Amino acid sequence: MSEDKKTLESDTPKIESLLDLVTETEDVNSRITFEEFTDERILISHDSTGSKQMKIKVLEVSDENPPSKWKFGDRVKISKILITIKHLETQEVEEGEFDIEAIERELAEKRHYTSTNRWIPANDIKNGYVIGSMHTRLISDASALDYIVF
Image (cartoon, rainbow, N blue to C red; front, side, top):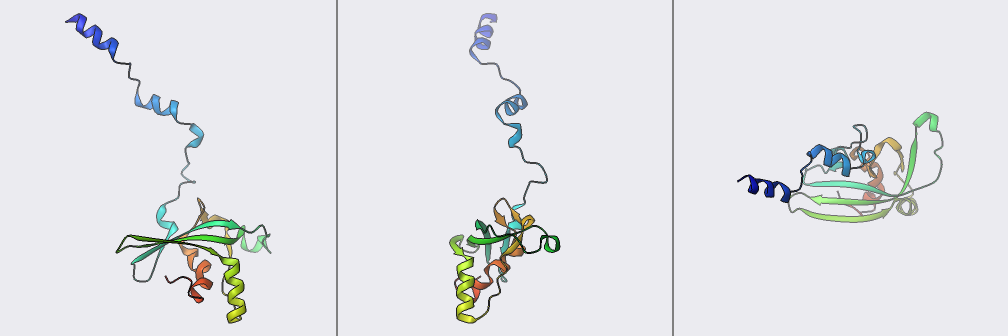
């Protein structure tokens, strides 16, 4: 029996502790801190009936400097976004890319006004996505021209 036990021990590789394996294979700098963690729920907005969810990803930012940083804080001017709408009843997902700058110009020509404020506080962009409370600010002109119904 002792010979069988020795062969079994020699055939199986030594198992290191799970913690040692994780720290060796994982780069310590790849971990996110608590301040960097973003809850998915703040990135999503809902329609008035609760049947749709929307998420907006920033695709392009203008390099224009904000007019008064001291008054409004650090802001960025968004040019292009990707909107993802999920219908909760059917689980259908729709995506569309919008050039907010072009839509703003078109609305100014057709309706002689514009309501979009493309300046978004830098803190309201998390992991490349705009937080839910800023969604209506970005899609108001597209809604006015019936490009998006939400």
